[in-house]
Length: 132
Image (cartoon, rainbow, N blue to C red):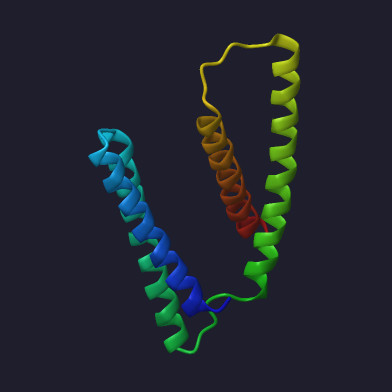
């Protein structure tokens, strides 16, 4: 997937999130709708700044994304997945032993686990970026 297709997919995703937020607000769930819209606008702003920085670097003839970035990203992803699997295995074991009563919907759980995976990857990426 080239950069132009990647940007188009990103813009489409942001538009869909904003549309979903508006739909949630019209259904009466203003908290969820506002959160979706605010999150989409925040991510859009951050990625727009990143796109502009990368375009500026490319126009100056500098390499914005090289093999080192790919190496660090893959190393961080591997470390994040290892920790993630250990955390999930511990949660499953604790759940089967202690049988906790959690009032947590599966969608909330999926969201928390996805956020955990993303934060682990980000943390390891910046860690490896400083160490190596």
